[in-house]
Length: 402
Ligand code: AMP
Ligand code: MG
Image (cartoon, rainbow, N blue to C red; front, side, top):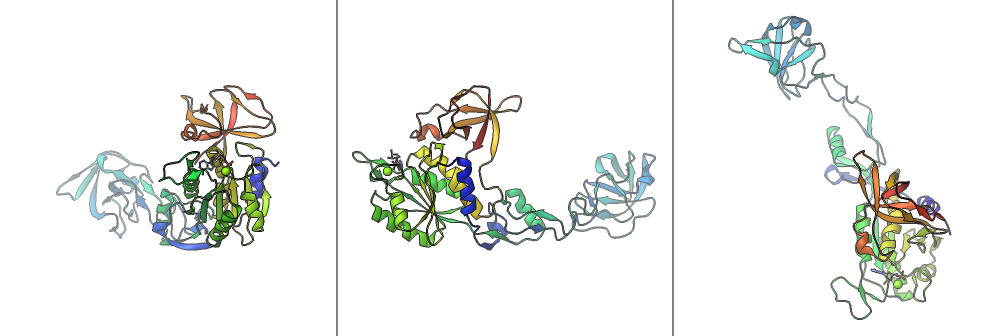
């Protein structure tokens, strides 16, 4: 049995980044950059006023109040492109270029205009440089402003737009097929008969995969027939970069996922991880390169194993530099119990206390089948293997659930 860290390492080693594609800026949100983004101009591109007010020479208003002659107006998009001389002021708006010769802007609240608006009185002096953002103070042309591997968020959309990226090179989104196995399963729109339950895993897996940037296809529920499963996997592999199955990986008579994968000549990288819940997790690759995650059937195990392993592969495929869930540290609000030989990932809700510390509240739950209780978890705390109890108040590693 390998550790969770080793399994994640194997996932990263065996995952190739997908080819890149060019998308319109409007479709770039949440995509992973495949190129560095470089400023094509200084920012600001000219000395820019931060205030509505008057552009002046600071030395002309050293003694306030001081009166200056208004010689022009500089508005955003329509600057005043002359030399400002001694004793002059230019009315200026936020975002407008500061005229040559001016070295400061006095805000309008500290001024008033006189004599048919041809003279302005500045009520206070102003030091040189005030309320001006110098050309290039934020970014210089040629600087890299976003690095390849970054997931584009809403604020970065503005960065791309500002530097003229009407299209942007990103990694292709992975295509993922999800497939639930189990003779007991019926589709969501059916009433379960005797001994049956509705398939719920396809929906959580599909949703987590979408959150990880994938284009998801939900296949019809498969029974526990190796031949049927084999056919479905083989067909899906033709269109998909990854297949995620659930169920059928334990030691029972009807646990057919591994048999199907072997008959398809898949290379199995691991089939047991020292993890609770989620020990019988399978990671394999089909001869055509499609990755397969065979997750256990229990809905909670599905959420844990998907996010530890399959999510990591999906982000790595898209070129993310840090694809695995990030470890943070929180204080435990209640004690938790570990188990021998396996690392435990237990559901908690994360909050902060008044001192700003991260606090993990373990959920009351009935174990790895209790997906209703699990649904309100926001994170998982990690109890190392062979640790009996971690007491309330102790610091503990956590990973946030997407
Ligand atoms: P298995 O790993 O196939 O032995 O399944 C373990 C448990 O998870 C059993 O109780 C299954 O009925 C349940 N289970 C398996 N697949 C699903 C699914 N798609 N949706 C809901 N529960 C499932
Ligand atoms: Mg089953």
